[in-house]
Length: 77
Image (cartoon, rainbow, N blue to C red; front, top):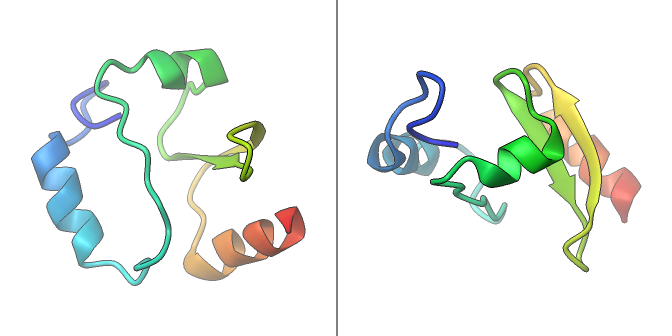
Protein backbone atom coordinates (compact mmCIF):
# COMPACT_ATOMS: atom_id res chain seq x y z
CA UNK A 1 0.00 0.00 0.00
CA UNK A 2 1.70 3.18 -1.13
CA UNK A 3 2.40 5.51 1.74
CA UNK A 4 2.38 2.72 4.36
CA UNK A 5 5.29 1.27 6.31
CA UNK A 6 7.87 3.43 4.55
CA UNK A 7 6.62 2.74 1.04
CA UNK A 8 6.65 5.46 -1.61
CA UNK A 9 3.64 7.72 -2.14
CA UNK A 10 0.78 6.68 -4.40
CA UNK A 11 1.86 9.21 -7.05
CA UNK A 12 5.46 7.95 -6.94
CA UNK A 13 4.25 4.34 -7.17
CA UNK A 14 2.12 5.10 -10.24
CA UNK A 15 5.07 6.83 -11.93
CA UNK A 16 7.37 3.90 -11.12
CA UNK A 17 4.83 1.32 -12.30
CA UNK A 18 4.35 3.08 -15.66
CA UNK A 19 8.02 2.36 -16.39
CA UNK A 20 7.62 -1.39 -15.93
CA UNK A 21 6.73 -3.96 -18.56
CA UNK A 22 3.38 -4.91 -16.99
CA UNK A 23 1.04 -3.06 -19.32
CA UNK A 24 -1.99 -5.33 -18.89
CA UNK A 25 -1.71 -6.27 -15.21
CA UNK A 26 -4.27 -4.54 -13.05
CA UNK A 27 -2.91 -3.19 -9.79
CA UNK A 28 -5.01 -2.47 -6.74
CA UNK A 29 -4.08 0.62 -4.75
CA UNK A 30 -4.93 0.30 -1.05
CA UNK A 31 -4.54 3.78 0.47
CA UNK A 32 -5.93 2.74 3.86
CA UNK A 33 -3.79 -0.39 4.18
CA UNK A 34 -6.84 -2.33 5.41
CA UNK A 35 -6.80 -4.77 2.50
CA UNK A 36 -3.15 -5.61 3.14
CA UNK A 37 -3.96 -6.18 6.77
CA UNK A 38 -6.88 -8.48 5.90
CA UNK A 39 -4.57 -10.52 3.61
CA UNK A 40 -2.03 -10.92 6.40
CA UNK A 41 0.72 -9.04 4.55
CA UNK A 42 3.66 -8.56 6.90
CA UNK A 43 6.53 -7.80 4.56
CA UNK A 44 7.25 -5.95 1.34
CA UNK A 45 7.15 -6.83 -1.40
CA UNK A 46 4.24 -9.24 -1.23
CA UNK A 47 2.16 -10.22 -4.24
CA UNK A 48 -1.53 -10.98 -3.81
CA UNK A 49 -3.02 -13.10 -6.58
CA UNK A 50 -6.74 -12.51 -6.97
CA UNK A 51 -8.95 -14.53 -9.33
CA UNK A 52 -11.57 -13.24 -11.76
CA UNK A 53 -14.25 -13.49 -9.07
CA UNK A 54 -12.22 -11.27 -6.75
CA UNK A 55 -11.20 -14.07 -4.38
CA UNK A 56 -7.71 -14.15 -2.92
CA UNK A 57 -5.95 -17.21 -4.33
CA UNK A 58 -2.48 -16.78 -2.87
CA UNK A 59 -0.13 -14.31 -1.26
CA UNK A 60 3.55 -14.61 -2.04
CA UNK A 61 6.02 -12.63 0.06
CA UNK A 62 9.32 -11.61 -1.46
CA UNK A 63 10.46 -10.45 -4.85
CA UNK A 64 8.99 -12.05 -7.95
CA UNK A 65 10.28 -11.23 -11.41
CA UNK A 66 8.02 -11.00 -14.45
CA UNK A 67 8.50 -14.65 -15.43
CA UNK A 68 7.59 -15.84 -11.93
CA UNK A 69 4.46 -13.69 -11.90
CA UNK A 70 3.41 -14.89 -15.35
CA UNK A 71 3.91 -18.51 -14.28
CA UNK A 72 1.73 -17.99 -11.22
CA UNK A 73 -0.99 -16.32 -13.29
CA UNK A 74 -0.89 -19.12 -15.86
CA UNK A 75 -1.32 -21.72 -13.11
CA UNK A 76 -4.36 -19.79 -11.87
CA UNK A 77 -5.94 -20.04 -15.31
